[in-house]
Amino acid sequence: MNTLIRLEELAVFLLSIYLFAFLRLPWWYFPVFLLVPDLGMAGYSLGSRIGAVVYNFVHHRGLALLYYGFGVSLGNPILAFAGLILFAHSTLDRVFGYGLKFSDRFTNTHLGDIGRKSAG
Image (cartoon, rainbow, N blue to C red; front, side, top):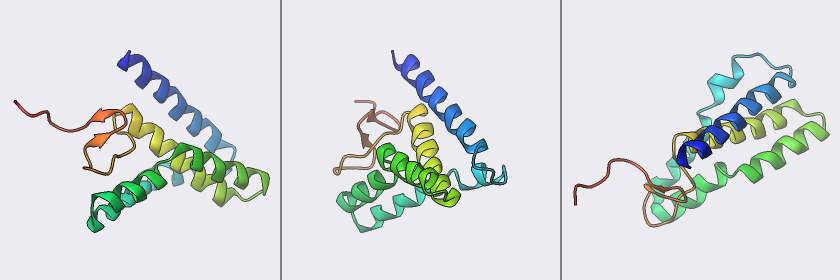
């Protein structure tokens, strides 16, 4: 089941690349900006509770789709691009098993624990 979910997320990521083509922006924008949402991890410098809120805010696909939708409807390709990058990045995170964070620690996500498993 886990493999099937990851394949589904990969298909959604490929959809985001397809939608990017309609924005008529330089192709290199996509790979260059794809990791920018991870700057949200900086919130963890203020503690795990604030870190989780900030991280989850910039990794929430619903919010990303709102930005994208407003950008498309307003004819603002930069806003649409910002939403699409947030969406693509969050989807790619899920392909690799990274999810939204709980406030107790960075490695506790809605998809389960990430990182090395303890030997106990």
